[in-house]
Amino acid sequence: MSITKSRVWFSPRTPRRIKEQLAGILGLPTTNRIGTYLGTPIFTTRRTASSYQYLVENISKRIMGWQTKYLSMASRATLIKASITSIPTYAMQTTLLPQKICHHIDKLSRNFL
Image 1: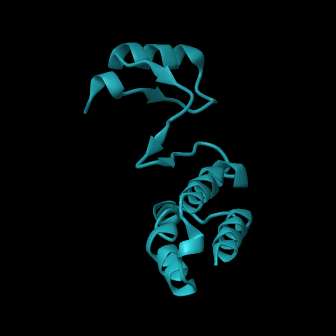
Image 2 (image 1 turned 120 degrees about the horizontal axis):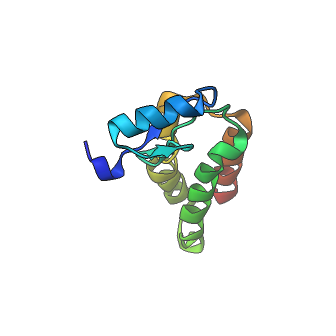
């Protein structure tokens, strides 16, 4: 465990005095945000479509970098299967993505074809 990278997160209902005491005992600073793990946010609140907007943006960036005029339909489909589908896979292993995000990703891949 890296002490320099470590933080303590408490529930919003935890009294301030207890937070300060425990943080002092552990010798770690407190935080309101837990952060990310392997690029996927760790949530402490309700998940919304905006929470997963980063997936749509990553896919859009990837698609924009491709020279589609030089690719056949079969090549485009292969690119989508090989690279685009792998982007949301890790997030989908732990949570259900909101339908809105799934529709955005589907629309991006269909527009590419």
